[in-house]
Every structure is written in C-alpha cells, then in structure tokens.
Length: 153
Image (cartoon, rainbow, N blue to C red; front, side):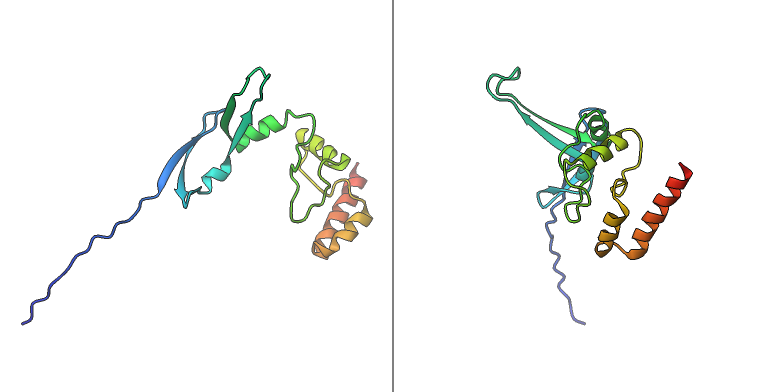
C-alpha cells in the first residue's frame, strides 16, 4: 500500500470591493460592486455631477459633487425650459438634430406627458428616407399609425 502525500494550497482570492451610492435628492441607496476600477450596472442607475465655481461666484472657488438617481434626474430635467444638449439623441443614429426646433418641440411634448417619439414631426418623405436605417415594415407601421391618429383627431 502506497502512502499519498496530500498538499493543500491556499489560493488568495480578491473579494470585489463594494460601495454604497446614495441619491443626494431622494436618499435612495444601492450597493455597487467595483470591478476593475469601474462600478457595475448599479452605477448606471446613478449619475455623478460635479459643479465648479470660479472666482467671484457666490460659491467662490468651491466645487460640489453629488449623485442623482435617474428618477430624480428626470424630475429635475423636466423643470428645464430648454432641451439639454444631447438629450434623447442616439449618437449612432441621430434622427433629430441636437438643439434644433424639432428637438425642443419633442422635449416640450415629453415634459407635458407625451411619449418621446422622434418620428412625430417627420414628414412622410423624411420617414421614407429613413428606410435605409429601419426595416421597411417598421416605417410602414409608423406612417400607418400617423394616418390613423390623424383620422381620429
């Protein structure tokens, strides 16, 4: 009978660090795990803002840093008179020009409870020109829905 030597080795495992993120406006808190110096998806629900104040400001040479959850951020943005640059603009397929009259009109509609619809102010010709980006059936549905809504108004 042979004797076996059993060697046990301890493997050092690094536990991911976590951090609590709290919305400065409503107090909602979530725990985010830091992976490779970046937060996990929870960080995407919270947004960090930094405001710096220059010489002569009422807050002379201060800087503020705070987090807002998406709900509180939306509540604040809905108080804006003018559409923020880049708001609801798909950077890959921009259907609306940033800070245009159309963009402002869509923003005003959204603030007043309408669903965001980047096709709302497009003519049928403009919609037909989008067939290279979208399935023909989808554009046909958008046009048919618009005609149906026009007939019901």
